[in-house]
Length: 63
Image 1 (spheres, rainbow, N blue to C red):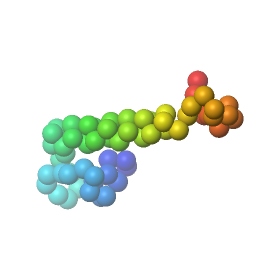
Image 2 (cartoon, rainbow, N blue to C red):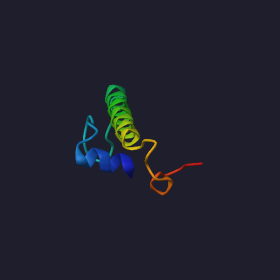
Image 3 (tube, rainbow, N blue to C red):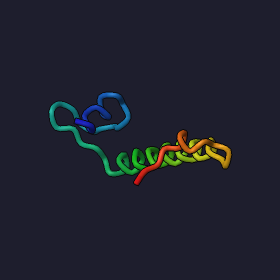
Image 4 (cartoon, helix red, strand yellow):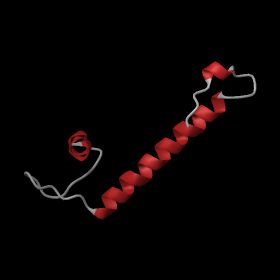
């Protein structure tokens, strides 16, 4: 369902139509690279907000 939603929103381009849509490998590589860039950018932005003066209760810890 995630892939179908990405296609319907225009975030993934397909070839063909109807029930069976084909996604070119180059399109998957483009989407993966864009997704990685967005994720890294968001993490960098979040890391800029945290410094030594940030109270511990405002920092989200994982694992």
